[in-house]
Length: 286
Image (tube, rainbow, N blue to C red):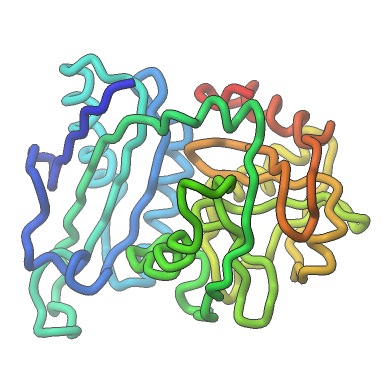
């Protein structure tokens, strides 16, 4: 896999955004992490829709045309370098200006498009599943920002620091201050319990991933299954017979261990959902 990276700021190749950018200074922005497959983004429609939906909450007005032009410029540059697979991170910030925390009267958004190689372990994780630890750090409640993939990721940074490369974990489950399951540090969670398939409610914390929404809106139904949002405590987590994570990069990946559930075996439903995703969208082999 290529180790090459590439960054474009407002459609121009650059090494970094200006130091005055409100995204880097205050986390005033949001981003999408997207799979690049065969020179295209399989879930671009979903990613674009989420950016257009969530950016106004942060006072940022960005258009679909601006987003499309930034993506097209990066993909064209990647084509010139014969790079057709990897990860694209599209960041929309509130640009520069304003005094301190006060935003400028007119926000001019800045769009940063970046390319990175795929993780080396992505194929093996899809095939064998992943092992999860349970993070001590608790996600604070913030109903206004709940669901948004904003730039303030310090919660995830602190949680991810709890285990190192010498420990047999691929990711960690994050809980709310009330002890409810919310997500992992980088993905959403789905559990098969005696109540059926459920995924955590994200009305007070967490990120509504585009893969999570695709599963709830389409793929579960396509498989003849039902999934609902629910409050999930540790007891309900422990009752799970199947568990998987979802993300726009890795797709659907089975979980084979958590401290609460113990060892798990990838189940038939999980494999059915993986196959449905693979059949409907290129780039997510199972």
